[in-house]
Image (cartoon, rainbow, N blue to C red; front, side, top):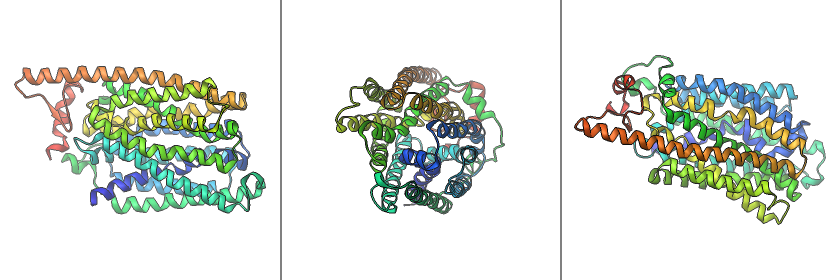
Length: 456
């Protein structure tokens, strides 16, 4: 029971911290642009500033997560992020929006991200890494779908009539109500984390209080599998960022009003729940890297359909089916790409640091994807802009597919060397946490063995 409550708290926190910075714009992008009086490029610039801050924060947040309590880091992050919603409800200027998104880059990443990844790996143990991350992202998707559906209903209820006939003032009032809903949920889940996530610190796992050092970062940077995982995450996350365009695509391609377009944006969240959980269970049975190869194949196919113009313009069901299919590939990738930490033989004691290294590179789409989408959409109004966006995403998908195949080759070779060493040494190969073998430089293994939580 307690274990289940911990996972629920991690799921709720893992999605709530991004409600205000990203989910709000993903579901209500057309409305946000109109109410705030900004362009796609101005919104993309705010996203980009978030990404710039996040790049530094990912790097620094890894060692923090290996040193301090996940519960405390995550609760403070949620509280600070929720307070930012108070500023957003005042419909700030583009300049203030840039500052706000940069602030959110600090709260959601420096204090939160690596701490959540480490806590999830702890929860998964030796045998359930795929399920741990699949349930995390699938649960996050389910929560996002529920909240997005409720927020669309709230938005529609706050309008005096049809969205297509609402005045700018009526749209602004209704949208402010949605912002307050997201803010309240974020603050409430901060309390949930404080109540249910254990206040365990890394020193209780390792038998000694670790220092705040870059040792884990240096070790991770020397592992080829970590660099390939980072490239996989870059390409997968580029696809995820493109889901921001689904609601605007449906409005431009199908003539949907703001409420109908928001419903299409919400549909992707429901798909995320099923796809991520399924991918997690498959990852434990087939290897996470094999699931990732399949996910990239689906992503590439869906994006090429949209980019080619085969499904737009056309019957609404064709575009919706394509969005659904593409979303399956995107969210399957998200469900398991951090399970590669175990498959790539990253030592448990360095989970936070390795996650930071992967994330500082892997989430660079936060920097470039917003402006790129803004330029492509603003310079080619209507359907051509959307086709250009998804053509670019298909290209990233192809790179990610090649990286996933290379990752499988590297890790299979490493496992083969480990098995050979174990047999050659009479069964005395080094075991650290949930991994076996020489994937980490030999001069690191003695220190890792001394800090192995599985031995305590």
